[in-house]
Image (cartoon, rainbow, N blue to C red; front, side, top):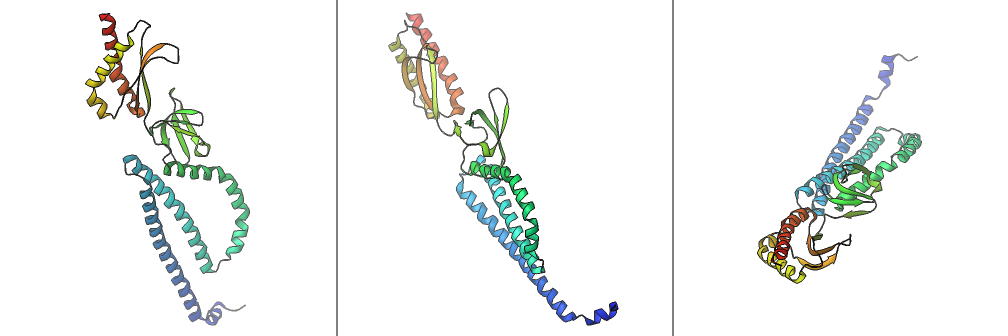
Length: 269
């Protein structure tokens, strides 16, 4: 057995120091390259997402979520390759490690397939602006108000107060009633004896007096006149096209005025 001191004397320290120095320099260079590449990736990701969205408060929130998702995903990919090259520099047999981890990776991949699908769908839901928090939507067969949009799930609160949580991979058909103006029907119940022509003139007079309100909400009333509602009741209908969040204020602004006009016509008769 060779004594330890004798063994140390046989070591070519100059070669060892040279090899350690080379590997340390390579690792430092790799770490520096990783840091610079990470900064570049973050800058490109933020620039891409900033250009893809208009600047409103909701867009800023969405931008932050998308930027965090994208940069984190790219960071993990960068860390993987950096670790790979670091092990290669240190002389670790990477091919053997990868072969040993293959079966475990396959099992993990099968288990994480649903999660990854949720994340990818969540990313595109946010990027494509399919819906925002507060929007009235129907997703598949569930209707309600969007309460939360996550990378993995979407939460919808229906009119009964039930909170539905859907995995993003199940979001296949989205009907959004909050993205643009939709029809609002103001139906005034009338009878067969109602003077429809006189009521129409009264409604036109109301609209003339409410020009400021109409311009403020970008409204153009469409008087449909006498018709049957879905319950087969005779009504005098006026239609507006407005955003869903304006419907209540428009309805309760005009309906009492129409009702007063109808009452006045009945009284005069």
